[in-house]
Image (cartoon, rainbow, N blue to C red; front, side):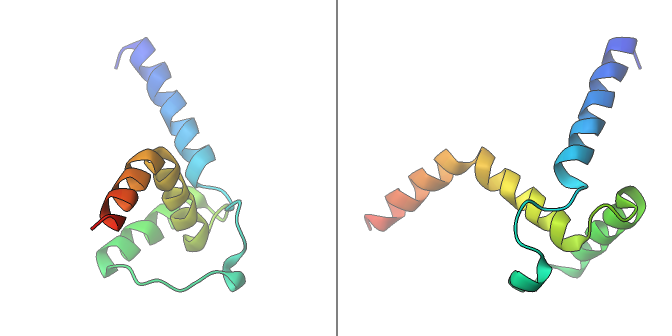
Length: 88
């Protein structure tokens, strides 16, 4: 890997850790809602938080952080689709 590629990759790793492997900004688990996810996704998330997280985040934190970013990044598309579907 080239040095500039390596620096860019290192930056992406730091971004990933700071965005996802941390406590959620939202309410703690006891105030949240229960959802069901596939066993495959559950296992992937469990491995991520167990190995990478090392106690800095739990499954609730990770899923909440990933979902929050998704909703933020795609809010325009979601709003458009929501409003479009309300017309029918």
